[in-house]
Amino acid sequence: MRALAKMRPGAGLELIDRPEPTGGDWDVKIRVLRAGLCGTDLHLQQWDDWAASQMRLPQTIGHEFYGEIVEVGAEVKELAPGDKVSGEGHIVCGYCRNCRAGRRHQCIRTVGLGVNTDGAFADYVVLPVENVWKHPDWVDPELGAIFDPLGNATHTTLQWPLVGEDVLVTGAGPIGVMAAAIAKHAGARHVVVTDLSDTRLALAGAAGADMVVNSGRTRLAEAQKELGMREGFDIGLEMSGAPTAVAEMIANMNHGGKIAMLGLPSSDYAVNWGRIITHMLTIKGIYGREMFETWYLMTSILSTSPALKDAVRSVITHRFAAEDWEEAFATARSGACGKVIMDWS
Ligand SMILES: [Zn+2]
Ligand SMILES: [Zn+2]
Figure (cartoon, rainbow, N blue to C red):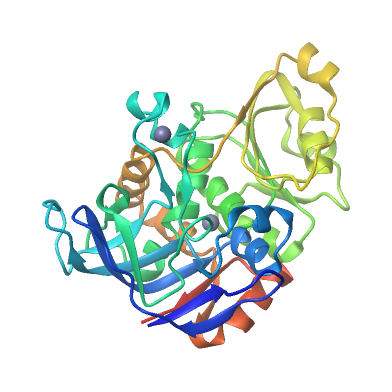
């Protein structure tokens, strides 16, 4: 089968021919039809220190996908060939304290699909049955391929009740754009999105943000004034990993504000702890999605709102055949795009 893999240490990837993966009694084999390109994949292609510490070569990458089940193990009862599915990319141990308490998203021994083990940028991928999410018929291949990042957006955005609240989203990548749409759906009053890219801010505006702010040109204090806000944002959703964006967020929160942090910074940085303390801010780190409450919520909120479904789908800006993977990666790296999808069908 075709697979996009890293064969040796160093930058780069290769589209290779390798044997199809095989599964055990509790595994499911899936024919990949669409796959989404994520910042993680760019790190793995580039082979930075983090990538070097994670991968076991040679290894196929990719974790965002939609496909069709072609084979199930002898013990798999709930799923069958022909089912359309995506997969949760965090494969957990099932035995640590958090796993046994039902908090599998907090497993201390998580294995990342396409990061620590062979992934989904291939004709076939094999996953444990408990990681497979079956889609209803109305979820088409492209929408299914972005359920993984939609899960990040859903899990981050719905940390706290949003009805009537003023929400700040820093970072207008695909997850930030989807977060803005979900925040509006969940009843927020003002949703403001910041970024340095006007292209990405336009996507956030189209997805339902009340105001987009290019933080290279405009300070959030001015944006607040324009919206008639007097006390600061109630909820912050940090999607950029950029220290300057975090500083601007902390400076614009109301007393008692809550911040969910999803964007990964590339290194340590200083923050204004005095302000966090005196403004009594709550800061919560978010990683991945809840298994499988977030998957349930994604499906249910999309099913009740055609507008939200359209807004979520609008983050997909580019589509490439798997053979054109180099162009797909270059487009994603340029930043002048939303979500980039590869067609493996
Ligand atoms: Zn991803
Ligand atoms: Zn565990």
